Image (cartoon, rainbow, N blue to C red):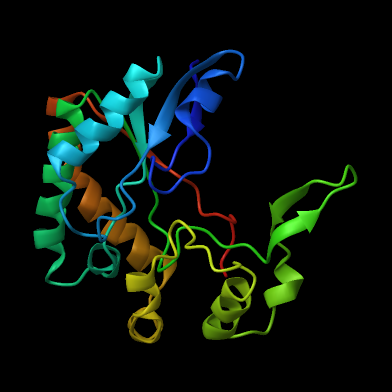
Amino acid sequence: MKMTFRWYGEKDDTITLRQIKQIPGMDGVVGALYDVPVGEVWPLEEIAAQADAARAAGLSYETVESINVHEDIKLGLPTRDRYIENYIKSLKNAAKCGVNVVCYNFMPIFDWTRTDLAKPLYDGSTALAFDYHVIAGKSPRQMADEILSHSNGYVLPGWEPERLGELGRLFDAYEGMGEEDLRSNLGYFLKAVIPACEELGIRMTIHPDDPPRSV
């Protein structure tokens, strides 16, 4: 097993590659392009720049998290094939830069959900936390507003502005969709991208729902 550290890139991460390299046993970084809108193709030159920076610091760059899946794919809309084509193009560009693992998720709307972004721990440090009772009985909109009110102005991964601007439409679109519908749409997506992954030598690693329950 190789130990890696999530890195958001030189523009978006206050932790430097030099600092990551100092962690004992650290082999590499897990990167991503957060300025590329979901559904668009990851530019080869941008992936290469991030990979080159990591390797110049003595760190491997073999994994990315995430090449996000467009909501039209999750919803099973007629437009999904176009976004799947773009996804495969992103996989090809990532493979050209030495990426062989792509972590992704298939959660509706949000990549992850928390009820506290800075929960105090016994030692004085803080951590992300989720308490279902905090959001029980609240609408998805109320839940999202509460989480964003504690973000201190930061853009949260998976909560990008272009996604937040579509919240109302997306909540309506998912109304009535069941777990089997979502699972079927995941199967459609995988049947389309896995053959390309096998050719490229890429392993797709799905992130469990975070938290692992319906919210």
